Image (cartoon, rainbow, N blue to C red; front, side, top):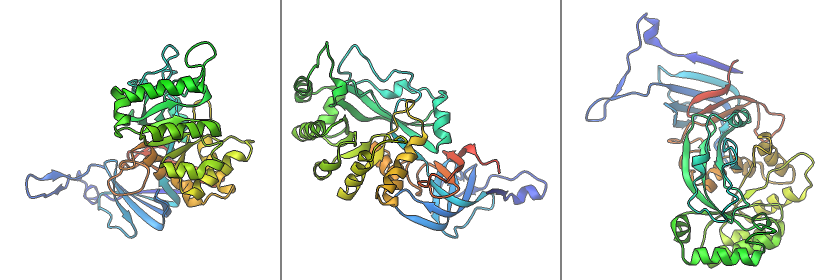
Length: 376
């Protein structure tokens, strides 16, 4: 249950509370206008740690303190929650709100296409994601393109683009091959990618110089091996998009330094997908979960983590994959994904552990603003 308590001593005297100032040695600086203190039975910090009976203080949408028994500003609103607070969940591949604009069937390579241009903040897709505790998604170019352009990290409320040009999307799976137009074979696709990276321009030049991570779509074992060999040949870094057949190749993926965006899970999926994620975890590979919405329901994101825990993945690792590790893979770990000072206040208030499917969402905050729940 949530209890909101507003401390406003000046208002109690019948007047209007004056804005206090903070002296910095120069001109006085206005204090934050909106300050909220959250108290919960447990905080999952997004880095694998948990804090029991913890607190965090948010000022104007940014976390300013996390700990126990913090000093609460006199004018702060206090939210006391008898459950769990976690960072907002992050979906690492999605086309929600893009209106089909993440794929151009007329060209096989669009390296300078920017997924942020397809972002439609008013889309109803994002309401579904907020209701599932997802506060940020990575809009990802379609895997059918050989070079699809760059992904963008966006928030599911407020029209915020956290990062554009997050990753360069490369299609190294059979989805990028075609029956009646180039490329029709893996050899042809790799030759074209080699040509583009041997004489790089634009976004490809950034990736070749190590200044832009790649996101390589893969399917079966041979595709994973080809992708890793291509990345080694051109000294690339980034993540693989596809985990289903990664089980036996987890050590090689770890040696490559690549992270993995795991395939979405659905009810009734066979166990290989979860076994592959377990193998990645045991090898020490950083991973997060894709969503591929709107084709998949947003609840599939949390279901994927819960399925992997049932298969033997450490719960702390699974929670991290939904939050802090996902943010690191997307290149935004310094802004979202954790409950830490200086990061955006994207929070989910749960009745219990987020990876227990019996737990329900009681409220969602994005940039410190409540966007779901909190009525009680």
